[in-house]
Length: 128
Image (cartoon, rainbow, N blue to C red; front, side, top):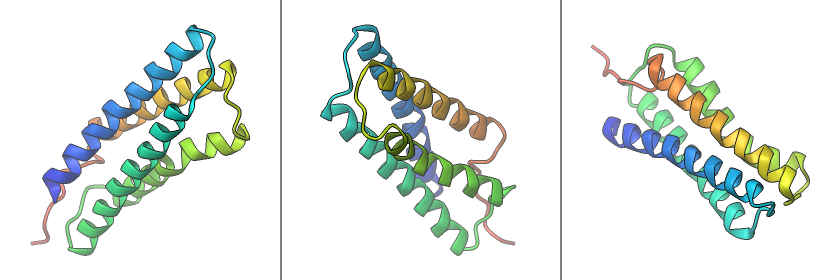
């Protein structure tokens, strides 16, 4: 499960960068966000929730990381922030919404990279 968690977490970083670049491209073209982008945001939320669930399962199995409280706090943030911005913008899909989602997606990628660099993602160690 440790390897699956790492693979999905890396996938989440790359997916965040992709969402940010895509939204920035749409904003640069003076286009709004389409249903394709909203579907991608939904996939992002499901991916982050899956990573969180795997982390919870590994925690219940007795595996531990250095600072589990910080890990779970960050993961909950990553799960709710994209749908939260959608809700805050009340479903707007204009150019300014595209800019907001581009900034948020790239920020999420930087948060995830920071988690990785500070050792919050793993390795998950089994109890002695």
